[in-house]
Image 1 (cartoon, rainbow, N blue to C red):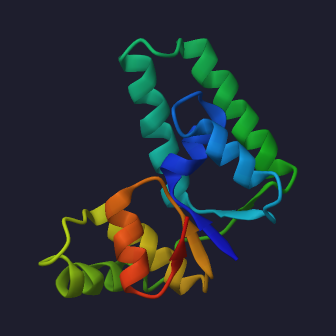
Image 2 (cartoon, helix red, strand yellow):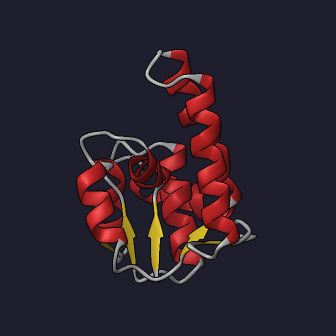
Image 3 (spheres, rainbow, N blue to C red):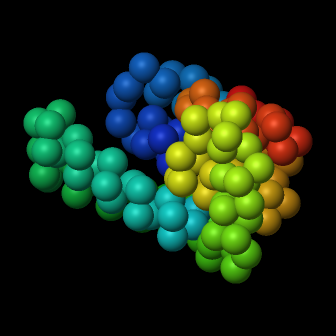
Length: 140
């Protein structure tokens, strides 16, 4: 199974420098997990695009509706954040934080991927990619 970082999800719906690669990969991917963490980060990312004037409010609402439609049709599989993900997040910070400049959300996503038994994590975040590799996850 593949776990996606939220920035990867955002690149699927908005046009940014990572969009072509994200869209290429997603074509052959199985249904992918969508946690409350993804949902919260999505809302913040889209709101930031509106704040910066890169999206109108109506465009952001259409994108969110499209995402929700994809969830309803099975493109995204809603799953809860694993119960021990926050504890694992703290452990990853203690173990890898002194050597890597990883943030809370980086470690929380990697912890979720580990707890959900993902084979790999797709992210465009270099710090998250390095952490994933350090804990044995393939990353792309």
